[in-house]
Image 1 (cartoon, helix red, strand yellow):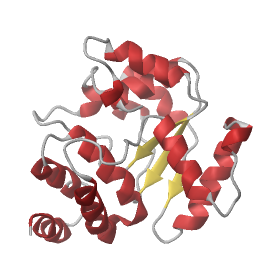
Image 2 (tube, rainbow, N blue to C red):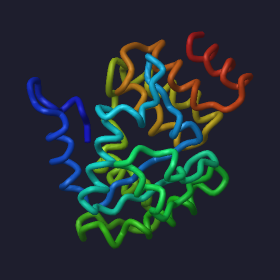
Image 3 (tube, rainbow, N blue to C red):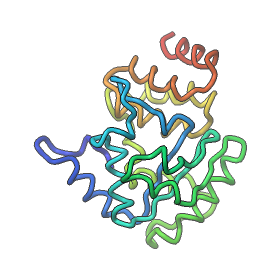
Length: 211
């Protein structure tokens, strides 16, 4: 869900629970740093009971909503001992992998996996896989709206192009999610740089962002 849609004074836990309960399936997009991602104070995000992603996943698992781990950039499914108690079930969910080299065919595999959970109005032709994935990810609360957060659409597009040089098409989702969670352009750049594995590539990305 788009957490910016939660009104002032609303209990965001209840709002997230209600949104997740309306999902047919939830996608957990997992990259190499997902398990150890930390907030600004250095606390592991998965250990924060108030973290939006943790709340969404825990709500879906508790409600027995199908949760599909979607692995990107060579990530693996987390082990049970790496997860808090309310997320341990995620370790036993069958995953789908998206790779840069096989992006189109991998997305088609994901679409076929999702179709049993989608209503008739959500079905699309095989040659149109990306809108289906975008809708499923957005419905699962894992992608934010266009132009989200403090960035304008031009900045989002520019960062997406730069990050895609290193991560491929999944950069689109990562940039929008970072824009939603960060307070400034510099914060977004730093958050995105953490997604890049090589120190040299990370430095090049930051120079391009701020150049």
